[in-house]
Image (cartoon, rainbow, N blue to C red; front, side, top):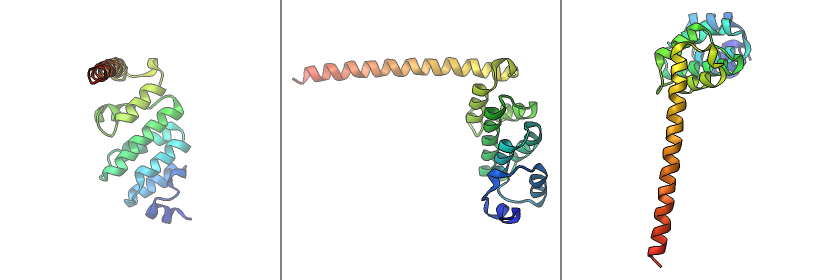
Length: 156
């Protein structure tokens, strides 16, 4: 299958390893550009994939923008680092939207010392929040267990 067909159907674009092909498709206004940047994240050096991922984050199609954020998470996992432009794009999107999981991937796979200040604060914040949530759930489970036990004894 040629790239012309791949751009029409989206099939095979996860194997894209040519940034120039992505650039040409972007200029032509092809579909599936977000899918294709996932391929670039898998197969190209981070510095080559990064500007294309950032461009895909601004595509008009919401679904394709989400794929660009997915590509960022993969880049963090595969490289153990991100470029300043990817850090900036994730920060501007923030938690709670399309960047939620890529930010969490970044905080997991990029060493703490290599994170910019905003990400270091997010990591501390999320660690504390997740721990408090865990304790809260454990407490509510314990209260529910006691309630069930007392209710069971009461109905005998």
